[in-house]
Image (cartoon, rainbow over all chains, first blue to last red; front, side):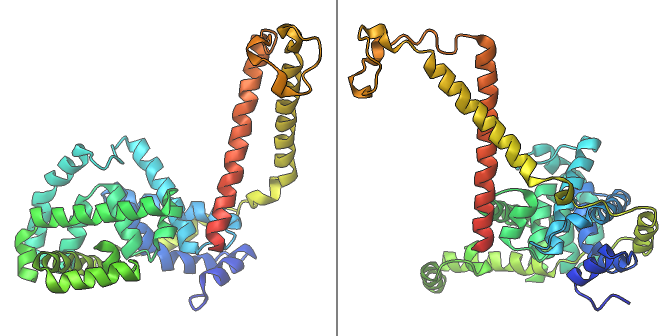
Length: 193
Length: 164
């Protein structure tokens, strides 16, 4: 089995023809990739399809990975471009930090999420639901920073922006998340305190 | 405040914020709020795809081959050759353009070896790049030259950041 090997060792094996070693990379990163993709697609079926596409693209381009960055950073770059292409195809409006429509859509699913919250009543569910209500750009940067184990410099590389811009985006995303939680989950936040 | 919570603020900022949190109630309350958001974010969980996900990916890639590395089929010498070609063209056109200027139009028959003596307001520039086709081509070259310069500077900056 190849599970004990690090990313670079697995990649080296795959490049030498051991295709099964790629399963180690897929199982290691599938949750990260799926979560990030879900931030964009907002539904599990599309997220699964896009995530699969991402791993296939990564496999095809594996020879281009030079090891200058972490494999995860390289992989998330593919996630970012693939998800943006997906959204363009779906003609979903994204990007603008002040995009009212995104917030309206998010607000419209709020009632369902709230019902779910009453059942779950957990911190984790509340945060995940609040993140889902954010626009994809904000949700992506938060997921990369808190769950994807990426530094601001690495996030900047993934998104193709300056590190300072990444920092500003992260700060804005956290502020928006805080606003969402205060607006939609005020009681739950109180209960948690 | 976020920099302080992330642990990336400077020692001076850290000291100032430490003092403010201890002495100012408003700062203390804001700090508690943001810290709560931070802790909530850290407690968020990753979503998992279906159980068959890895198997599905492996079935798909079984039919595929890894594409050869881009760097193997893009020769750097060719890229630099193209760059050199356009730079030579730009220089050639500039030399040609300046060669067309009538430096003697100001009345002095001597060539302007000493440019400080030339009255530029009287120099005849009318023959310089008076062909639309040449001008268009020049413009294209200048744009390509600037694009090349931008790529060069971007690479330098990237290398600098990597080294840092």
